[in-house]
Length: 260
Image (cartoon, rainbow, N blue to C red):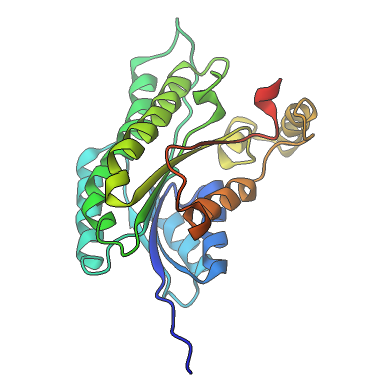
Protein backbone atom coordinates (compact mmCIF):
# COMPACT_ATOMS: atom_id res chain seq x y z
CA UNK A 1 0.00 0.00 0.00
CA UNK A 2 1.52 3.33 -1.05
CA UNK A 3 2.23 5.76 1.78
CA UNK A 4 0.27 8.99 1.73
CA UNK A 5 2.23 12.21 1.29
CA UNK A 6 1.90 14.46 4.30
CA UNK A 7 0.91 17.97 3.31
CA UNK A 8 3.31 20.56 4.70
CA UNK A 9 1.80 23.01 7.18
CA UNK A 10 2.34 26.75 6.72
CA UNK A 11 4.05 28.68 9.52
CA UNK A 12 4.58 32.45 9.72
CA UNK A 13 7.73 33.70 11.45
CA UNK A 14 8.23 37.40 12.16
CA UNK A 15 11.77 38.58 12.72
CA UNK A 16 12.65 36.03 10.08
CA UNK A 17 16.16 37.35 9.39
CA UNK A 18 17.34 37.42 13.02
CA UNK A 19 19.20 34.75 14.98
CA UNK A 20 16.20 32.98 16.52
CA UNK A 21 14.09 33.47 13.39
CA UNK A 22 16.67 31.93 11.04
CA UNK A 23 17.48 29.05 13.39
CA UNK A 24 13.78 28.31 13.85
CA UNK A 25 13.32 28.27 10.09
CA UNK A 26 16.22 25.83 9.68
CA UNK A 27 14.91 23.58 12.42
CA UNK A 28 11.38 23.46 11.00
CA UNK A 29 12.55 22.85 7.44
CA UNK A 30 14.64 19.91 8.64
CA UNK A 31 11.47 18.17 9.80
CA UNK A 32 10.06 18.34 6.24
CA UNK A 33 6.66 19.06 7.77
CA UNK A 34 6.40 22.80 7.24
CA UNK A 35 6.32 25.56 4.65
CA UNK A 36 7.45 28.93 5.91
CA UNK A 37 6.48 32.56 5.51
CA UNK A 38 9.28 34.80 6.75
CA UNK A 39 8.50 38.41 7.61
CA UNK A 40 11.26 40.96 8.05
CA UNK A 41 12.03 44.63 7.63
CA UNK A 42 14.90 44.39 5.16
CA UNK A 43 13.97 43.03 1.67
CA UNK A 44 17.58 42.18 0.76
CA UNK A 45 18.15 40.26 3.99
CA UNK A 46 14.93 38.37 3.38
CA UNK A 47 15.98 37.37 -0.13
CA UNK A 48 19.40 36.25 1.07
CA UNK A 49 17.94 34.29 3.98
CA UNK A 50 15.33 32.57 1.80
CA UNK A 51 17.96 31.58 -0.79
CA UNK A 52 20.20 30.08 1.89
CA UNK A 53 17.35 28.22 3.57
CA UNK A 54 15.55 27.03 0.47
CA UNK A 55 17.60 27.05 -2.76
CA UNK A 56 14.74 25.33 -4.60
CA UNK A 57 12.44 28.24 -3.77
CA UNK A 58 9.58 25.84 -2.93
CA UNK A 59 9.20 26.03 0.84
CA UNK A 60 9.97 29.61 1.88
CA UNK A 61 8.02 32.75 1.03
CA UNK A 62 9.12 36.19 2.20
CA UNK A 63 7.32 39.46 2.86
CA UNK A 64 9.05 42.73 3.67
CA UNK A 65 7.12 44.55 6.39
CA UNK A 66 8.02 47.17 8.97
CA UNK A 67 6.01 45.98 11.96
CA UNK A 68 6.04 49.46 13.47
CA UNK A 69 3.36 50.44 10.94
CA UNK A 70 -0.12 48.85 11.23
CA UNK A 71 -0.94 49.60 7.60
CA UNK A 72 2.06 47.56 6.43
CA UNK A 73 1.00 44.68 8.67
CA UNK A 74 -2.50 44.85 7.21
CA UNK A 75 -1.25 44.81 3.62
CA UNK A 76 1.12 41.93 4.33
CA UNK A 77 -1.66 39.86 5.88
CA UNK A 78 -3.90 40.61 2.90
CA UNK A 79 -1.24 39.18 0.56
CA UNK A 80 -0.73 36.14 2.77
CA UNK A 81 -4.49 35.59 2.92
CA UNK A 82 -4.80 35.52 -0.87
CA UNK A 83 -2.07 32.88 -1.16
CA UNK A 84 -3.38 30.72 1.69
CA UNK A 85 -7.14 31.19 1.41
CA UNK A 86 -7.89 27.50 0.95
CA UNK A 87 -5.39 25.71 3.18
CA UNK A 88 -5.18 28.27 5.96
CA UNK A 89 -2.22 28.89 8.29
CA UNK A 90 -1.06 26.38 10.88
CA UNK A 91 1.00 28.67 13.10
CA UNK A 92 2.16 32.20 13.78
CA UNK A 93 5.44 32.75 15.60
CA UNK A 94 5.75 36.33 16.83
CA UNK A 95 9.50 36.56 17.16
CA UNK A 96 10.33 40.12 16.07
CA UNK A 97 11.44 42.50 18.78
CA UNK A 98 13.42 45.60 19.68
CA UNK A 99 15.41 46.50 22.78
CA UNK A 100 15.44 50.22 23.58
CA UNK A 101 17.54 51.16 26.59
CA UNK A 102 16.32 53.45 29.37
CA UNK A 103 15.10 53.61 32.95
CA UNK A 104 12.33 55.57 34.67
CA UNK A 105 14.07 58.91 34.24
CA UNK A 106 15.49 58.71 30.72
CA UNK A 107 13.26 56.41 28.72
CA UNK A 108 12.14 58.49 25.76
CA UNK A 109 8.66 58.48 24.29
CA UNK A 110 10.22 57.24 21.06
CA UNK A 111 11.82 54.29 22.84
CA UNK A 112 8.63 53.51 24.76
CA UNK A 113 6.50 53.59 21.62
CA UNK A 114 8.98 51.50 19.66
CA UNK A 115 8.93 48.76 22.30
CA UNK A 116 5.16 48.74 22.58
CA UNK A 117 4.57 48.98 18.83
CA UNK A 118 6.87 46.16 17.75
CA UNK A 119 7.11 43.89 20.79
CA UNK A 120 3.41 44.00 21.67
CA UNK A 121 1.08 45.70 19.20
CA UNK A 122 2.56 44.03 16.13
CA UNK A 123 2.13 40.60 17.72
CA UNK A 124 -1.52 41.34 18.46
CA UNK A 125 -2.21 42.71 14.98
CA UNK A 126 -0.55 39.70 13.35
CA UNK A 127 -2.68 37.32 15.39
CA UNK A 128 -5.87 39.29 14.85
CA UNK A 129 -5.29 39.56 11.10
CA UNK A 130 -4.32 35.94 10.55
CA UNK A 131 -6.99 34.51 12.86
CA UNK A 132 -9.43 33.67 10.02
CA UNK A 133 -6.65 31.62 8.37
CA UNK A 134 -5.74 29.88 11.64
CA UNK A 135 -9.33 28.71 12.07
CA UNK A 136 -9.13 27.07 8.62
CA UNK A 137 -6.21 24.88 9.64
CA UNK A 138 -7.40 21.28 9.83
CA UNK A 139 -6.74 19.76 13.24
CA UNK A 140 -6.16 23.05 15.03
CA UNK A 141 -3.55 25.79 14.93
CA UNK A 142 -0.75 27.27 17.04
CA UNK A 143 0.36 30.71 18.16
CA UNK A 144 3.76 31.17 19.76
CA UNK A 145 4.83 34.52 21.20
CA UNK A 146 8.52 35.03 21.93
CA UNK A 147 8.72 37.13 25.08
CA UNK A 148 11.73 37.27 27.42
CA UNK A 149 12.82 36.53 30.96
CA UNK A 150 12.70 40.33 31.25
CA UNK A 151 8.92 39.97 31.12
CA UNK A 152 9.14 38.03 34.39
CA UNK A 153 12.16 39.62 36.09
CA UNK A 154 12.77 43.09 34.58
CA UNK A 155 16.14 43.77 33.01
CA UNK A 156 18.29 46.59 34.32
CA UNK A 157 18.03 49.78 32.28
CA UNK A 158 15.39 48.29 29.97
CA UNK A 159 12.09 49.61 31.32
CA UNK A 160 10.09 49.79 28.07
CA UNK A 161 11.41 46.45 26.85
CA UNK A 162 10.62 44.68 30.12
CA UNK A 163 7.11 46.13 30.32
CA UNK A 164 6.32 45.24 26.70
CA UNK A 165 7.51 41.66 27.19
CA UNK A 166 5.48 41.29 30.39
CA UNK A 167 2.40 42.47 28.49
CA UNK A 168 3.12 39.92 25.76
CA UNK A 169 2.99 37.16 28.37
CA UNK A 170 -0.42 38.33 29.52
CA UNK A 171 -1.61 38.66 25.92
CA UNK A 172 -0.64 35.02 25.49
CA UNK A 173 -2.66 33.89 28.49
CA UNK A 174 -5.67 35.97 27.53
CA UNK A 175 -5.73 34.63 23.97
CA UNK A 176 -5.18 31.06 25.16
CA UNK A 177 -8.33 31.35 27.25
CA UNK A 178 -10.29 32.89 24.39
CA UNK A 179 -9.14 30.80 21.42
CA UNK A 180 -9.14 27.34 22.95
CA UNK A 181 -12.70 26.79 21.73
CA UNK A 182 -11.37 27.20 18.17
CA UNK A 183 -8.71 24.54 18.62
CA UNK A 184 -5.92 27.12 18.72
CA UNK A 185 -3.18 26.83 21.32
CA UNK A 186 -1.35 29.99 22.41
CA UNK A 187 1.95 29.68 24.22
CA UNK A 188 4.83 31.93 25.18
CA UNK A 189 8.59 31.41 25.25
CA UNK A 190 10.79 33.49 27.55
CA UNK A 191 14.41 33.25 26.46
CA UNK A 192 17.20 34.52 28.66
CA UNK A 193 20.47 35.77 27.18
CA UNK A 194 20.73 34.35 23.67
CA UNK A 195 23.56 34.90 21.20
CA UNK A 196 22.00 37.19 18.64
CA UNK A 197 22.60 40.09 16.24
CA UNK A 198 21.13 42.41 18.88
CA UNK A 199 24.10 41.79 21.18
CA UNK A 200 26.49 42.11 18.23
CA UNK A 201 25.10 45.61 17.60
CA UNK A 202 25.83 46.70 21.16
CA UNK A 203 29.27 45.01 21.32
CA UNK A 204 30.88 45.85 17.97
CA UNK A 205 34.26 44.13 18.44
CA UNK A 206 34.47 40.33 18.49
CA UNK A 207 36.58 40.37 21.62
CA UNK A 208 34.11 42.57 23.47
CA UNK A 209 31.21 40.36 22.40
CA UNK A 210 32.90 37.14 23.49
CA UNK A 211 33.84 38.72 26.82
CA UNK A 212 30.20 39.74 27.33
CA UNK A 213 28.95 36.20 26.59
CA UNK A 214 31.60 34.60 28.81
CA UNK A 215 30.91 36.95 31.73
CA UNK A 216 27.14 36.49 31.54
CA UNK A 217 27.42 32.75 30.99
CA UNK A 218 29.66 32.27 34.01
CA UNK A 219 26.91 33.25 36.46
CA UNK A 220 24.19 31.12 34.83
CA UNK A 221 23.68 27.72 36.51
CA UNK A 222 24.22 25.82 33.23
CA UNK A 223 27.40 27.78 32.61
CA UNK A 224 26.71 29.44 29.26
CA UNK A 225 24.47 31.87 27.46
CA UNK A 226 21.87 30.43 25.12
CA UNK A 227 22.14 29.61 21.43
CA UNK A 228 19.34 30.39 18.95
CA UNK A 229 18.97 26.63 18.54
CA UNK A 230 17.91 26.35 22.21
CA UNK A 231 14.87 28.48 21.45
CA UNK A 232 14.24 26.92 18.03
CA UNK A 233 14.04 23.46 19.61
CA UNK A 234 11.37 24.64 22.02
CA UNK A 235 9.40 26.23 19.20
CA UNK A 236 9.54 22.98 17.24
CA UNK A 237 8.13 21.16 20.28
CA UNK A 238 5.25 23.61 20.76
CA UNK A 239 4.31 23.11 17.10
CA UNK A 240 4.40 19.33 17.39
CA UNK A 241 1.50 16.93 18.10
CA UNK A 242 3.04 16.26 21.52
CA UNK A 243 2.15 19.82 22.55
CA UNK A 244 -1.47 19.68 21.41
CA UNK A 245 -2.82 19.92 24.98
CA UNK A 246 -0.53 22.74 26.08
CA UNK A 247 -1.90 26.26 26.01
CA UNK A 248 -1.33 29.41 28.04
CA UNK A 249 2.09 28.06 28.96
CA UNK A 250 5.03 30.34 29.73
CA UNK A 251 8.19 28.39 28.94
CA UNK A 252 11.38 29.85 30.37
CA UNK A 253 14.54 29.05 28.37
CA UNK A 254 17.37 30.64 30.31
CA UNK A 255 19.84 28.02 31.58
CA UNK A 256 18.56 28.63 35.09
CA UNK A 257 19.17 32.40 35.11
CA UNK A 258 15.92 33.21 36.94
CA UNK A 259 16.96 30.88 39.75
CA UNK A 260 19.67 33.31 40.82
